[in-house]
Length: 167
Image (cartoon, rainbow, N blue to C red; front, side):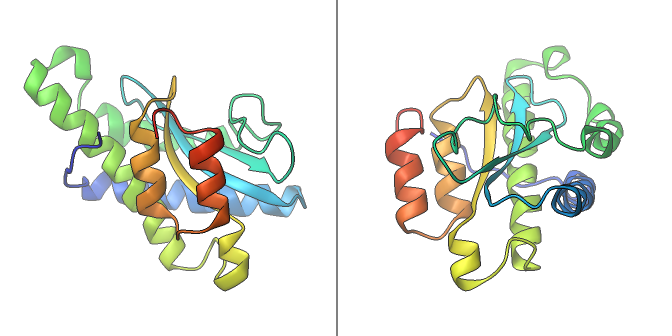
């Protein structure tokens, strides 16, 4: 179950700026019918990387997408902001847990900011795109972020039924 936590403003700013630039570059270089845009991190909540998928049979396969780790040199700029907050393994358990959730919530807030700015489209165009904050390996919390970031409808329902862990 996703823990409610406050995003970290400096991380939200850094992630949103880098993600915006990375997505714009991706779209300018590849005229694909994108289905998923995911900010993916590890269980240690290191800085995210961007993965996109296209509509079709492999639309839920983040790891094997031809657009996995897209524009990673842009997202790598967020490493400074993440590193400044320390490593989870160096924190006591309670602080590490809180920091973990704040980092993931910051990724969610960054995607929400871009969504509100219209980068993922509006109306029917937006309904064709799924936004995810995901961990590798995936876990049941990914579904909570998906529900929070996306309008209800066939695309979200399909992802929850076909790809979400423990949804």
